[in-house]
Each structure stands twice: as C-alpha cells, then as structure tokens.
Length: 151
View 1 (cartoon, rainbow, N blue to C red):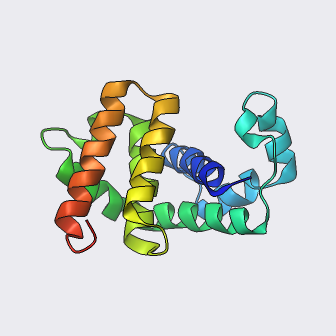
View 2: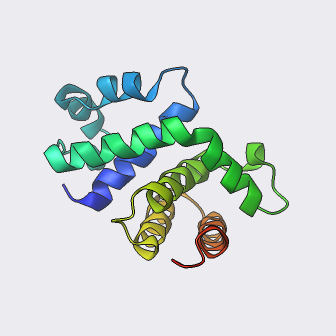
C-alpha cells in the first residue's frame, strides 16, 4: 500500500466520522482491522491490502486530526467556499477537503501542492468535474490566503 491509498482510506474514515456519533478513536478501532478490511475488500479494491505500520500511522494521524480539528477545518471550508453554506457542500468533497487542510496545516512534511493534487485525484474517483474544480479552488485559495509564504 502507498501513501495515496492510505490518504484515500483516511478520506473514507473522515466521511464516516461526519455521519457518526463515534469518536475518531472508536471508528479507528472498528475500521482499522484486518477483518474490517477483508469485508470491505469484497466491494472496494482500495481495501484489498491491509496497511503496513507506516500507512496505519498515517491513516490514524489524519483521522484523529480531522476528528479533533473538525470545527476549525469546517470553518476554513466555509470561509473559502464563497457563497456556499457548509451544509450545502457535498459530504465527500468536505471529507476530502478536511483531510487535505489538516495535512496542510499540521503535517509540514507533506508539500501543499502534493496534498492538493492528491485531493483532486481522490475527488476525480468519486465526484463530478465541477465539484473537483470546486475542491481545487477552495484548497488553492486556502493555501494562498492562510499560508502565503508556502503558497
């Protein structure tokens, strides 16, 4: 498994968090098991391989980060989604943006351009082109305005 796949799994978990009363820790304990991956692999090839130690740590860090910083991340999404209320934004798109914004803000080892490119690629798998452009625009505006020295 590579980091891109681990990131996409973290987006899945971030999406699940949005619809659950579970904490990130409870969700991770339930979902990051070989058994859970084996069940999901039947319908989703993304889960065919159980993550190695490094990928597990990466998925865990992203999921905990989104869980712990959700309100902050949602505030940024709403701020840069000009003319859109957060409640109107596609839930998959918001999960992708939450994970990416967490990476940009709290994981300096991930270059911003890489994080945004990965968000766009994940978006292309699940969303229409217009929504992918929306994600790219919000993330680009976010980086240029909040982190101009890194833009």
